[in-house]
Image 1 (cartoon, rainbow, N blue to C red):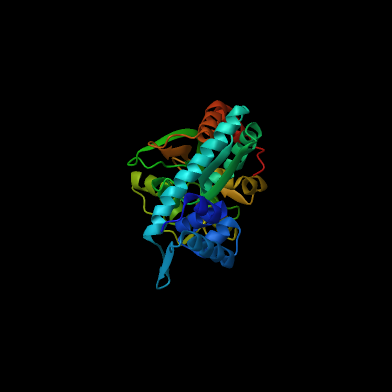
Image 2 (image 1 turned 90 degrees about the horizontal axis):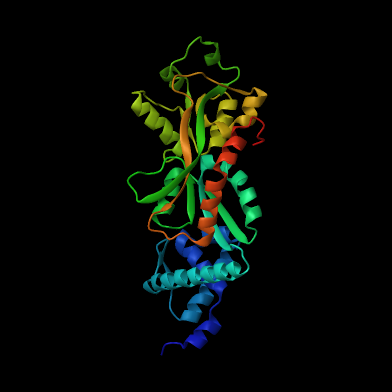
Length: 317
């Protein structure tokens, strides 16, 4: 006989539902634990309590892979509706006080991590009741999360044209050709782009936005790219250049201190620096929440000030 709603409510906790949703989205007890700040045994305990309360299994292992059961899939839909209603309640209560409240989940591609904190400081000062969460990923992961509608907003450079996405450009992202200050390429009178690309190119991994920008430029100008090494972040590429491993094309904001100190020098190349705009992106079919609207309005109202700020030569990033 099915449990009454009253008994079900007395057995379930929001924490169990939160942990369940995290396990579902990560397909891993350990990753869910990392996401929520819990140990794996604590996650397992929450799931055992949830399954006992529902009297059905929600996950099962096939070999070493974790799968969600049919009951679990049904539960996911209900939890998402429930959590959405809680967010609406939170927003409505805050609106009664003249505030915007709730969660704002932002995904930023690796390059944008140098910009996002400077956007969030004044934004959070305007909206102290908002809980802002930022996840930094590469472009491929950002697109996957857009497809899965996992977040409120994504900040990225090259927006996929084939997908139904709303985007708002707000700031230029300059990519510079750089080498260590004592690299022999600086002794050349004139360097072609192809010579630079052949001088031991260090590159981001496939799926990175900055790598895609360079690949699109190379295709347009019929240039060949053959990196001698791929690294998983802009900081790793930067330190590879500083160590003398090779040359690279890097976001300007990621190397400002090294340029100012003279540790890195730009290589003058035709059609450089590469310029792409950062954009705030979300699926067109997504109805903006109050927190999303607040952030989009903030960007629109402050884009001029942001451009001046990031063009200043004394940004301490």
